[in-house]
Length: 571
Image (cartoon, rainbow, N blue to C red; front, top):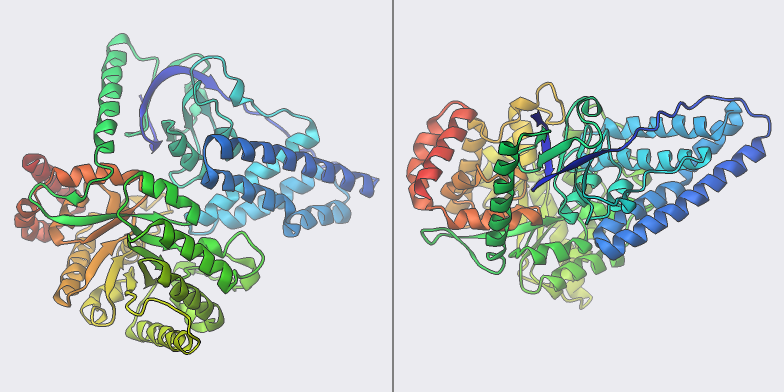
């Protein structure tokens, strides 16, 4: 029995197919003909572009547009002169072979992105690794593993898998995969969930523990892997697999239903998105709206700021596709750890506490005003709401609202239509805002609790630090008390409250959030149906009676166990 992290749900049983590692030793060799070496590098780049286009086209045809964009990013890396010029300069200046130059340059970029405290930016490191390895393989004439030509049903076992590997899977034959490295937010994990391939990661020394043709059971729900189980265990998991698949069919019945508890309490289940192309998955999973549109993705993977027109078209597309359903769009949250090269932002010692989000927008008003104009114009085409992130004091929200009002006046004067009654909200993700939420509630139409940062700032834990990750606890009593007070203060002023962090989809935490009176739960689209089913099985008023006792408890584990106990009784 091996324990890892489930990154794509489901249970599968099959033989292992171990991806052989190419133990390539890049030897730093001196060269004499610089031009010939640069030509060799360019040939490998062009070959890699062709391969990436083939993977992209296959992904677009068999998986979807959103997933295909991963490989657009790969192609952009090969076209990025920042990357290619550094390789060429290293060939010229150091008189070394292309393989060594690529390895040294890519390692520098990978180190930079890996040191950033943001999952999206860390994924850049994975993209660069994938692309640079492809170019090196082409330079060395090494063929990459062909997962599309599998002839029997297998579970792929590998130290790591690139998005290219995952996209090339023959779905009929590759039933699941296990890796040593990776995470829930990686492109590989996203592709696995889209392909509905169960997957587990985070198992150390994996290739020493599993060999070709071992019979495996992987449980992507729990993160468990069983190697060469006996017949009794196989029967047990075949039964679990059947039950899980039946449960999925039950969840699907809730796609077009309202989110109503057993005792008639109605809440909204909405989705988080990063791009307009995400809408397909949102609608397929029965979302009642968009609770968080992360607009920073429109500003990344490009060499200049998006224009007002480009932003307007993106926001308009989303609200039109969502019809009359609400769409909460967060103003840009970049800076610090989210690097956007063309903004030339300074490096910071502690980017999460630095020059980012609303702080940067109030300083760089040219960029902020352009976005607000685009948002207001798009509000004429659907139920759009504007939300400001990273608010820590009253001056920030008042200044943001003042700028928004100036733009409203300008649009009116120029006869440009927009929703005069557009709702304005703010994220509560900083303890100072949570503590002052009774005051902030007089300034806005709604709150959205950013649980990821609120927990991190409240308990002073970097959740990316393995040594202290156990202290990052959604059930921490201080965090729950803050959430409870935020909701209470909002309702006292007659405004609604949502949550758009990971905690909103935590099935163990949802019962207490319901009892506190959370109005809206925003999550990854794939989590919506399970959450709706769970809520339909709960009696909110019964759990509410237990709330005073829960909020007096002193330990997160104690709270977690108690909630599990009372919800099992009430179902």
